[in-house]
Length: 301
Image 1 (cartoon, rainbow, N blue to C red):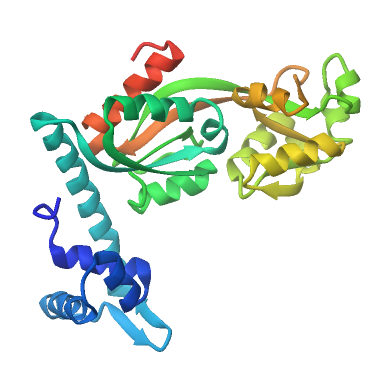
Image 2: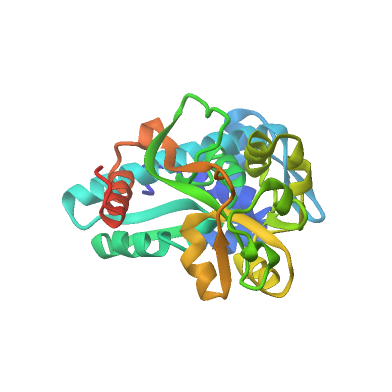
């Protein structure tokens, strides 16, 4: 990919992300003087200062932030071009950056990634698991190439597209000894008598809960928020708390000694989609992931 992206632009990305000349030089495997000269060439070309030099390191200026945003987009497009070209001449190689929802990360996604790597063993993948809102922010900053997660209600910018993968229903999980397990079907009144454990910064949940529960949704505010399913499950097995999660996580929850319960009248359904830039949607890595997902779920592509 070196020929597709300027060496100086690569050096700038390293400096921005490291925030330190020494760390960036180590990351790039070059000397600090060489990195300094590379930065000066860009700054002279643009006639701007990209970083403020402080005793703590490098702090990006406003123009530095602007260049970083565009540099990430250039680097991403170059990586995907290199991936596709390498696939035409030999086994596809390169690097992809994927974001995946918390529940998917511990259910279907590991097998999906294994399928992809068996097909393309030379492609390096970095995976970030998180809440949809945060993953989409990273996607829009070009820090991720694509995201597999629940589709948000808010519309996406025009340059992004979504590919439907599956739909999943939300269920209640709690300890097998929980009083809710004695209910044939759980009512909103019964549910709001207990405290909920939720995912950190899950604003999408709050929006769906308001639609489903109306004024009662305030009673669903979490007593604890976490990014860890292990912490969530640990709390649920030892307290009378409950959680509302995708039914994809039920097999894992049951292995941890938890029970899944349905809400009277049901909760809500989430659409899981692959989200990426329109310019990348036909690329080989995106197509391969879509095919692997279809093969795993039995859904026609």
